[in-house]
Length: 172
Image 1 (tube, rainbow, N blue to C red):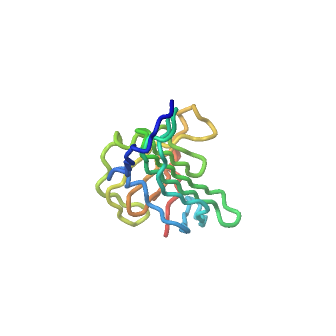
Image 2 (cartoon, helix red, strand yellow):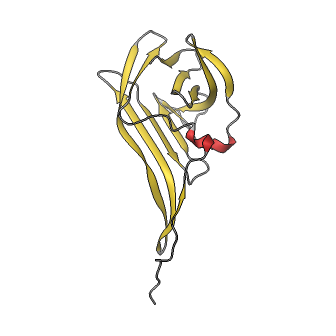
Image 3 (cartoon, helix red, strand yellow):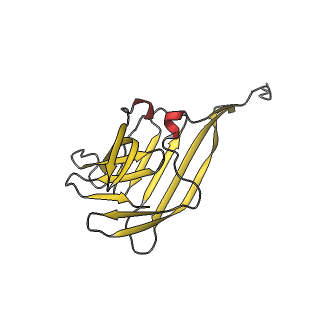
């Protein structure tokens, strides 16, 4: 028996408005951050992808296409600051962020608390800032070593605040 799937209508599921808050970076960006020791690090983008992926099942494609986004940065020169964000529309817990030696774990964007309306970081005021709990990659699943990532739609990653109050802050 031959099954014909030519009648499948393609449907595209795009990011929701709340998910788009985490789609901040465009192709070929370079970012600068400063740490608590006043060391400035420049990181450059080496991967950028924003497209649609078809949902597959046992007999082939379903005609359902889900938006996905991934961007990665690496240090220019001798730095040790890496950054990656991956977002997939099809999953409820779809946001993965890795920054320095910390990363998120199963972030469900739709269940995030409301953002901070306004906050001043390093002398600059940012609006609608989300706070995300980050876990040390070196000690996972030990949840005692956590940091807080500050993120908004306009700038993306703004700051990573460590438990000892040291921080890495975006300066560009």
